[in-house]
Image (cartoon, rainbow, N blue to C red; front, side, top):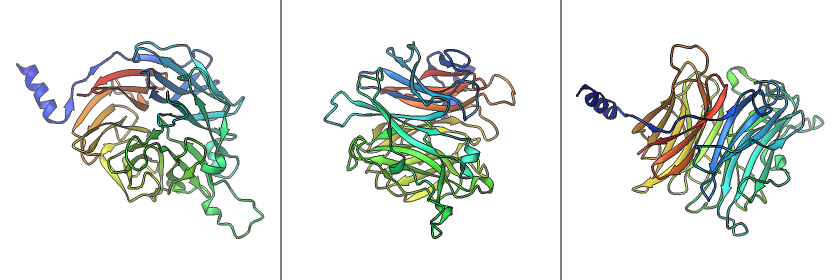
Length: 388
């Protein structure tokens, strides 16, 4: 009787027990040619296969160096995964921030075409913030479910605002974009309304010289309305310190972007709402329900109810360290979060990070897949949550 009483209390308080699949290792550090794997991203193809991407860091766990983008495919909803495939190898330089999305609206590709957006870099982030180096933006495509990939296309000049030549004395160098990164996690495509077919990639950049408390960072996004032929940069989020971001579709042509607060002064997620598909922002605010330890978070539209988008959000729900990976569900487009599920948490009182970056994918009307970093970044695992 006590057991059922406790379950009732948890339900009324917003917590739900999970009907979760076991945690399946997908990328394990020190195996398959890479010392470390980080920055997970996942999508589902029209035939139901799952594609899990990550950065394969060849020599160590650092954010810069010989880093490849790797892929594994699951044909059974994440129970098992195929062999590791290297999709991007920039030789000894960095290739990272994989942001995949499936374009399902291009009449030239009725079976869908996968876009993989990513970045390359030729120096450490700290040095690029000082103007010593550049981060570029690229994409590859696949028309056979991720088994083979096109040649890379460089879209840096359309999606980045690189430093202007020093010979232009009138240029405002405070506007230089220096550091640059997609998402991390999946990109998105509008499925409904005025912007149906638009592919939107959330991103962030630093502008001008480094500032205290990472005030030189701001989030933005870029998009294409013609299936990758041309790209446009959306308006920058006004809040200094907004950083790693992910976006999702709301009702009535709206878009929500959810960002990390790099400043760390408020340990919560930054939310920005656009009424024109990500071209400009109408409001930006902190959602203090979505507590965060200065980390990445993932967001996904998983359905609609009474005209409102049902939103799933996942992050390390802790204000001090990366732990307590939690999935939340909103039935009113993020105004409130009525369900939450504890996905994974450290077993004791460890001081090191336990769960960190994650990405979400819809498995079925009542199930979500979560691909996430676990156990001090020693592995990236996959699990399935029955959320309703």
